[in-house]
Length: 272
Image 1 (cartoon, rainbow, N blue to C red):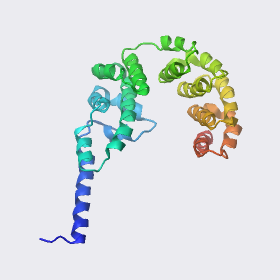
Image 2: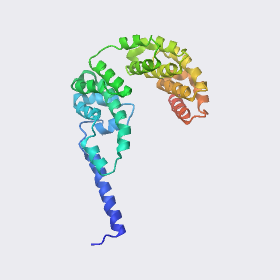
Image 3: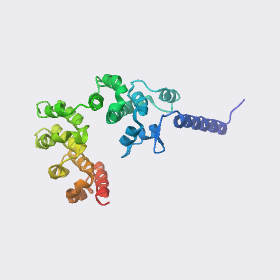
Image 4: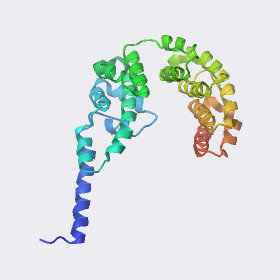
């Protein structure tokens, strides 16, 4: 039987619709506020951490699956059918693994069953995943970030310093004791240390009276990366960045689109 071009188009559309339905309807575990776990995981929002905490141990298997090196059955099928490319999967995988580790850590002791998988991830060759998994284990075990904060006093190895700085930042407000060390790091002659001190200050977002004035000068740095990190840090302070309103407003006309975008987001928060 000869198949016309129109029939081929219809058949292709039907297959695509079936695959999309498979993606949407594949079991995704418990839900929170009417949204599935899958939705909370992939569509980042302000309440995603709250959602996974609320779902508790029921959400742990889903996050453990995201930590796996091998693709899930669903992704394997989509790759086989050429709906998802192997390269796209590879590029997103580490990001998903890091996000899963972060959420498991935020769930605290409810995520104890994930410890073996996190321990494996903590030996990854990728420093970001390795650090994220290590922090998650520390949170689940209710360990303090004090030992990591102390390591920030040694700036002799910029690469080791920024990796530790990002781990410290993942503890959020719990790492407030690191603020004085990070403020001092802003004066360091090494730009890698300066830049990651800005990021860590935004992740911790405490002591705005000291941090906002220290961050603002970087908004006029000739280094676009510094400006990006500075506006990102100010955005993280939300309404506490009010004293920086004039500087943020000037950043709306920055030559870099990333800076302009974050400046617009910050102004929206400040004007609420």
